[in-house]
Amino acid sequence: MLENQEHSGNSFVQKAARGTGAPHRAEGIYNKICADLQKGIYAPGDKLVLRELAAEFGVSLTPVRDALNRLVGERVLEMRPNRTIAVPIPLAAEVREVRRIRMEIEGFAAAEAASRISVDELEQVELACDRYVAARKSGDAVVTLEANRVFHFSVYAAARMPFLLEIINGFWLRNGPLQHLLLQSGTPRFDRSDTLHRAVLDALRDRDEVAARKGVSDDIDYPTNDIIMALAELRESQGR
Image 1 (tube, rainbow, N blue to C red):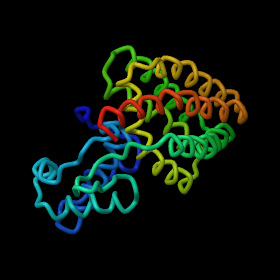
Image 2 (cartoon, rainbow, N blue to C red):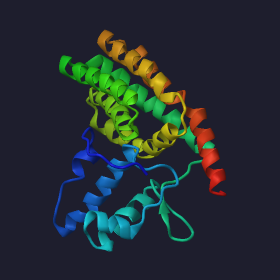
Image 3 (cartoon, one colour):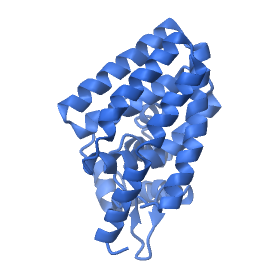
């Protein structure tokens, strides 16, 4: 698991700090774990230990257990036979299925953004694009993963379709850990993202819906084989 840093950029991150009373504790913990999953703080196979999280949040075991059980019920986390809760290590077929869905819905969001984006929103995307390049060059894994997420969500937010954004948020709970694994594996995936992010930015400037969709879809598609290989190696190392 990577060391966490606080950033904003989507609903889970913004909601994580809300609520201090008992009724809000489980919800706050749930939102914080979701934000960390999206940001790539956790990798596939990472265990979420009840007592450690309770100590981190300064709460009893009950709200942490409630939050984790909710994520297990949503199939974001998995309950192993020994009752350990962990980030799933998806199979190749699952990775390919999620890739196809993400290419459709996130590509659609980018196309919609190209037709609706404002000058201010375009400036935010350009800033996110530049910050991603700087983050990758810095070699800081946490900053790089978060900058990548912020870039994508700055594009999707410009589509101004809140229900669509909610669906994309759900898929990024599963995508964040895979991005973590990919960065750890040493693949050049993030080098190529520089070029693809810039292509998306240019498409938004030109209001080219087809090019915007293609840029985002390509960014989702091309690391798939690297992800599958890294997951297979991880599964083998754990004897699974």
